Image 1 (cartoon, one colour):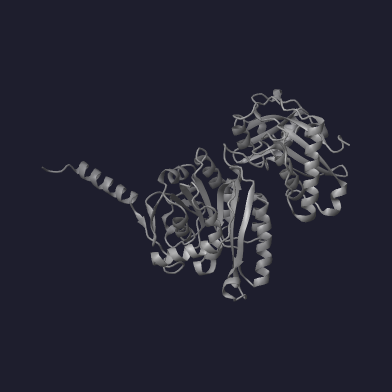
Image 2: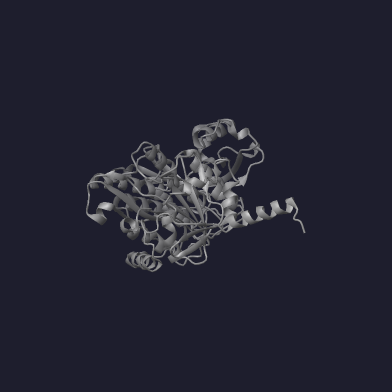
Length: 510
């Protein structure tokens, strides 16, 4: 029987697409960056893992920051992060690496098939990969970006040793820009919002080609910035070249993603540079292994360092009513102020975080709170959680540290300043969507604004302290906290959420 031309074309189309779906991406640095023998490679990675001393945390690992040099240089450093995820219930790993060989403006995601190493093939999570590709014009499959690139590949053998039955989404970032970082982080947040089994790996080395002592100085500054979990601050220090990361876009994207998933802790597990490994300290490359954690997931949450506040609010509504029924009595207020004061004094003086024990049911309830500090009547710091993901007394403890040391508007509080500091605590109700701005009661409601990937928050007392009208309150919130146009709150694409706060301070309780 004579074949139909249409059927013939269809046959070859199906054959070709099926072949691509089964396409195996061959390694490009096997035998160079790591051994090409499966036996030797597995033994080397297991030896690195045995050397790494890592304690298990009762938290979710959202992301790793891991080096991508040859294993002889950085394998012993990378092992720390991978040991932290060993046997965790991770089913997909999004590996974000920088482009060393191809310049392009955007993000390239490998869409399907599998990646091969001497330890076997790892399938691509095609569903997640194509969700990312379809989410924005800046995200596509740019095949040549992967042709010679090693930054993604070198992470895979470690994953093969520490995880079972997992998939990967290989991602290469081109031009380092705030736009590309925010586009990819937002796409990841949206694509993984219903999943708790996804890990992000930011593949990066640190400073390059500086003398040993200079490299350590630069890298130590970068580490301090990472410890703040503040992607905006780190971004500007990378742009100004105060800090160095060859995978800068990968790290900023990962921090933005992690903050959106409620990250509250980063552990710097190991730092070294090539001079520590080889002994040649004339021109070195820095390597870092770090893990980013969040409280065990019951939805999402995290620091409302303003850009991610709305994500917290949306999910928190399922857990709590906006009616602020949990009114703290005078004794409970004094106890929280005592915790904040003791914590701040100890941390500022010795960098030690105090442990406290509580039995009061209300202080043990998961609630959001801000800690605000003033020095001689002037604002000195203010940071908090919109939605509590841990007991209230621990939220207050941790936010006291953040307000004193991590508010990007101020230098960290010094021990000499402590006696001039006054502490104020705002315990928050759960935010609710504002349908009509007339619902906002000045001095009663705090407000969160969110549009796209920009957001900001004002506490209720801001209106009282400034004397603003409702319109001035919202104008300033949009312009000065969210980086939007002043009248953005009038736009239908802008979301507003309100909440109430019980506010008390040391001045009130003396």
